[in-house]
Image (cartoon, rainbow, N blue to C red; front, side, top):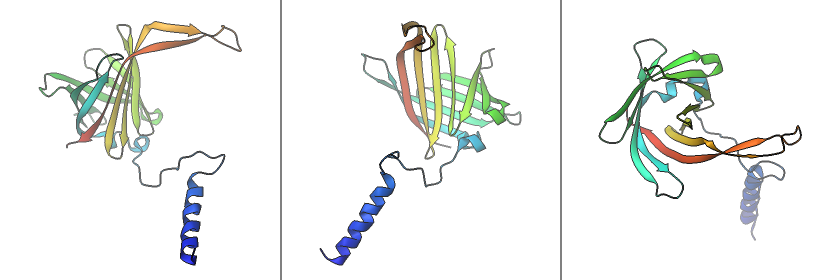
Length: 191
C-alpha cells in the first residue's frame, strides 16, 4: 500500500474508535443543535401540526387516521389552546387548554374544560402524562425530534394484570399489565 492508503486507513480506524470503544456505549452524544423543550417549553411545541397515526391492536391489522394538534397561545398569558382533531372530516374535535402548574418542575395540565384535568410533565424534549378512564390507563407522549412531533399513546388494561414475585423484601410482588393498543405517528408543523 502506498502512503496515502495508510493515512486514509489510519483516519478511518481513528474515527471508528471514537464511536465504538470497548466498555463504552455504542452511541455518540448529539453534536448538532437539538431544541430542548425543557428549557423553552412550550415555545417549541407552538404551531399547527398534522400527520398520520397508526393504531395497533394485537392480532388485528393496523388502522391509520389523520391527527391534527393545534397549539396556540390562549387569551390568558401563559396558557395555550390545545386542540386535537382526529380524522379528515374535522368532526372529532377536542378543544382543550394547556396550563402551567409549576413550570420549574415541568408540571402542566391539559384542561378538557368539562371538569377533567390531566396532569402532564415536561422531561427533556417530551411532554407526557398518564390517566385512567373506565379501567383503561392511557400513557401519552409528545416529543419533538428534528422539528417533527412524535406522538405515542399506550392503552393499558388495569384489570388484566399478572402478578409475579414472592412478596418478600428480596423479591417483591411485581404486577405487569396488558398493553391493549398502541398508537404512534409523526406530526409535521403545517403552520
